[in-house]
Each structure stands twice: as C-alpha cells, then as structure tokens.
Length: 185
Image 1 (spheres, helix red, strand yellow):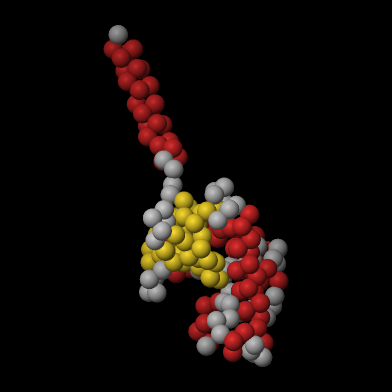
Image 2 (image 1 turned 90 degrees about the vertical axis):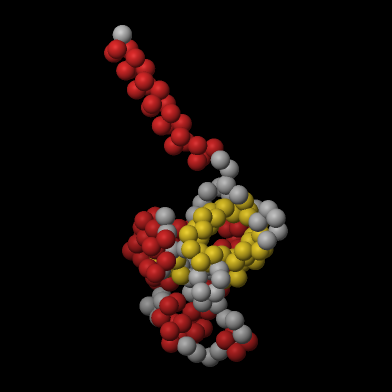
C-alpha cells in the first residue's frame, strides 16, 4: 500500500511540475503594434492602451543610417558604406514586420541612456528579429547588450554562420563596425 501511495504521489508531482512549466506557454504575451522602424535596430511600438514605447533591439547593433541631409549626401566613402548597410538593415526589419502584420511581442531586458527600452523583439510567428538580422549579416552581435539577452547564444550562432559564409556586411572588406563608426564621428 505504501508503495502505491508513493507511486501515486510521484505521478502527481510529475504532472504538477509539467503543468507548471507549461503555463508560460498558455499565457498569451502582449502584442504591440509597430508604428515606425527607425533604423535596423530600433522600432517604435504602441501597447494595447496606445502608449508609445521606443525599443532598441537587445543583442545586436545594426549599421547606422543617415540622420541629416548632410549625412545623406556625404562624399565620405566610409559613411556612405555604413549608411548603405544601415538602410538595408532598416528595410529588412520593415519587410519582416510587414510580412507578419504589424504586431510583435517584446521581452524587455533593460533600458538605455536615451530612455529606450532594450528588448528582444519577436514577430507574431515567434521569429526573433535579431537572430534573422545576425544570420543575414545585417546586424552584428553587440557585446555590451549581451548580458541581458536571453537569446544571446542563438544570435551569436547566427552571426558566426553569417561570418563564415561571408553574408551581408561580412562580405564587405570596407565595412566598419557600427560602434567603431560612431566613435570616429
């Protein structure tokens, strides 16, 4: 009899553990509506109450885009190269969002000095945008943001694959990493 009771208790404990671990998948995550793709690693979304949230992608740093007419028409080859890749990254983010509707889910992990929320951004089908950008060589792993990046391993693996296949910026010997480009300005 003791054996039967122990067995039943063990079975109940296992069922409860599996049930509790699966609860996170049953609770729907809040969907946000994308209002604007600012560049290859920043979007503006609204929550269900209409509040705007500026989100900087966790894990990655995308090439810069021009922010003024002077930058847009610069003759500087390094800047033009940076902006060319930055526009491609921005367009790819917009394309991904357009393909899945304008809804995303966020996993906010931090905030930055500009008041933006830093977070992982997933399309409605679960695709992590940062991983796609890294895999396509349109964003680079950004080490300072990795500490709060739950999907760091996946993004790092995606970048390693892009690098080994010379995809995107990895095919361009003249490309300057975004953080290095910003420090030269």
